[in-house]
Every structure is written in C-alpha cells, then in structure tokens.
Image (cartoon, rainbow, N blue to C red):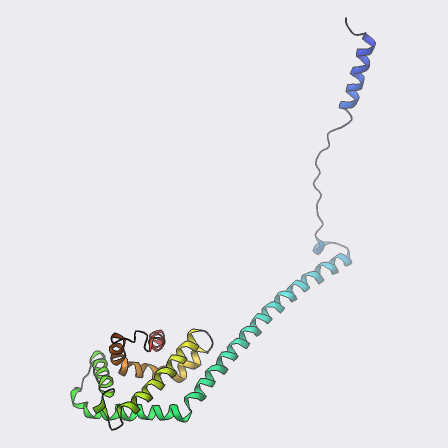
Amino acid sequence: MSAAPGKVAATATRLAERTEAFPEVEDVEKRENNPFTDGDWRMLSYAWSGFALRILLVLGTIFSVYQYMQAREEKRIERTLELVELWDQPEYQAAQRSLKRRLTELNARFSADLGRSTTPKELAIFQERIGIEAMKAEGGTMSSDEFLESFDRIVYFLNRVSFCVDGGLCSKDVAEAYFRDFAQSFWGYFAGHIRQERRRGSPNLAKPLEDYVSAAR
C-alpha cells in the first residue's frame, strides 16, 4: 500500500528542516594584534617590559656562567700555586740539586763526545746516554741509592703535576710556566732509563710524566 500524500509531504518538510539546521560556516582566521605596534600605551608597556625582562634573564644567565667559570679557573690557579709551593720545599729542592749536580758532572765527563755542530737528534741521544749513566753506581760522587731517592721524588712530583693538569684540577698555563721546561729536560735525559725499567717489569713508570711532556710539545 502506498503512503498517504499528506504524510509524505510532512516527512519531506521535517527532513528539509533538519538538513538546514546546520548551515555551513566559513572559517575566519583571527588576526592577532602585535602588542609592539598596538595603539594602547598599556599594551606597549606590557610588551616592552616583558621583552626587557627576557633580556635581563639571558644576561643574568650569561653572567652567572661567566662567574662560575672564573671561580673554577681561580681554583685551578690556586691548586697549581700549591704545587709550586710544594716544589719549593726543602726535600724537593734537595732532589733538584742532586739531579743537577750529577748531570753536570756527567756532561763534563762526556763533553768530548759532542761535536761543535751537534744535531738535535745527536743531542737527544747524548742526553739519554747521560741519563742512563746517572743511574749507575759510578755515575757520580753521590751514592746510587741516594740519587735514586731523589730521582723517584722528582718523578712522583711531575706525575702529580700531570694528573692535576690532565684532570682539569690545575691551570694548564700556570703549570706549564713553572714546570714544562724542567719536565721536558728531565724526560730528555731519563727517557732511555725509564724505557729500560718498563721492559724490566715497571710498564707504567713515569707514564703520566710522558703524557704531560708529549701534550706540552
């Protein structure tokens, strides 16, 4: 059976009303006002005060980092100067004198082996020979045991300098100003002896000192 015409019309009307109940709405983009170009002086005040606050925060952070780095460097310099004070203590001064006296005697004894025009390589070989002779009993007037004690004390100290610099606990520039020349000269004389001792069973003897000298070069 077909539906009554009146009911069909009523249904179509209701469907049309429901369809038209949700009209299409065009998306309208809202333009945000730029507070820095706003005509209201209060908005301008808020915008520039906020900008200034951000700048101050950034500058404050940079200054805090700078102060922190300065404090760390001052602490490094302080630790390095403590090593300088230790180096000036009587036991280390005595060890330096013993070393200098023995090397001076050996350099005078073997000075004839050096020609007038010695190359850097020849000089390095000569110094290593002097260092090996210095560790022998006949290497000088001081007893070998007494000299070995001075030698070990200096190696210990220079290793300590190397640890301090390599670990970032000491100022590298200050340490090099005080100890680099001595460390390089010491290594130049005794590198041969130290390598011999490593082959004899002390593989890490003066390893920090060697690293420090190599880095300084």
